[in-house]
Image (cartoon, rainbow, N blue to C red; front, side, top):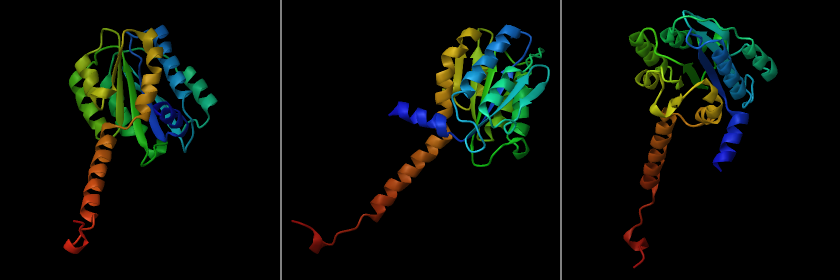
Length: 229
C-alpha cells in the first residue's frame, strides 16, 4: 500500500521544489558533479509541469547563483539538460545567502512560484557555514514560509547542529559519509518529498479529533421510552 502511495506521488505530486547546492571550494569539481547527478536523478522520478512538480536550482559559494527558476523549464528532458550544464563556481560557504535568496526570491510568482502548493527546499552542503549566526536566522525566516526544508550533510566536516537547525524538523535531516553516497539516498529524499510535513500531520490530527468530537456531539440521544431493557 505504501509503495502504491509513493508511485502515485511521483506521478501526481504538485510541489515547487528548490535545490540549493554547495559550490564552495572544499567541494571540488568532481564532487560538485556528483551533486548535479543526484539532482538529475531526483528530477527524473517526478512528472514535470505547471500542474505537477516544478524544480529550481540555486548554487552558493561567495555569492548565490539562480541557475534555474521554477518556471524556466516545463519539459523534463530540457530541464535535465539544463541541470547538467550548471557551472561550478567555487568560493566560501555562505549558506546564509542561499537560504535568504530562496526565502526572498525562489517562490515568487514571477519565478514560477504557485500559491497553495507544497514548497520543498533541499539543501546540500559539505561543511560549516561561513557565518553560523546568520545561517540560523536565515533558516528561521525560511521556515516561516511553511516550506519543508530537507538538509543533506555530506562528509565529516558538517556541523550537525547547524544542518538540524536548517531542516524544518529532525525527520528532514540526512547525512552521508561522502559525495559518492548521494545516490544511496535518492529514494529517501523522494519519499521525504512525498510524505506529509509535520505541519500537515498536525492539521490532519486536529481535523481527525474535531471530526470525532462532532460525531460524538451529533450522536442522537435516546429517550427513556426508546431504551431497550
